[in-house]
Amino acid sequence: MRILLSLAAAISILAVALLLLLTPIWTHFALGAAASASPTGGGQAAIDASDKTVNALITLGTFDFRAADGTQMYTAEEQGHMRDVQVVLYGFLLVAVVSTVFVVGSLVRAPRDATRWGAVARGGIWLIGGVIVLGLFAAFAFETVFTLFHEIFFPGGNWSFPADSNLIRLYPEPFWELSSFALGVLAIGGALIVWFLARRRATALTAATPNAGVAT
Image (cartoon, rainbow, N blue to C red; front, side, top):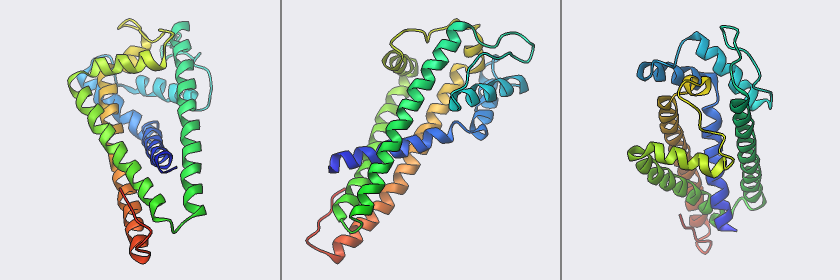
């Protein structure tokens, strides 16, 4: 129960961080930042294409639309990959919704149970540890991590495209490096907030009921 509660808390925090990166505020900034490092990114045309792509992704739409110059934006293979991305994204979000309901339900059922609040606090610590370990590895071998991620979640293999493909030109490697870093920062920030609040609540409950016990 406590382990599941900690895991669910970590998943919920990570999901919130991921959703923040799907907003135009982030995608527009990241596209512009990637353009300074890669001549294939940036520009209003890229922003418009990205907005259509993200909108299709989160609304379960299709990726069969045209670029600013009137040509087909994505090939059939690229569209197939983006449909796979939809499946992975919504699969994770479904797990995140279940996790959030589980955390909230557990705390509502026993709001004065210090061990449950302690388990939520541990979830924040677990997420911080996981992000730091993965981040350190990615800092020295980003391409390896990126490839491994795709091989795990897209085993069909339709995720490798030539450098001149529109999908790669729209979202070059600098975009993903920056977004991965931002995801880590947001996840750690959210985890610290959850840890602080949950730990504080658990400590207060333990002080009020010494026999309750608490661990983080």
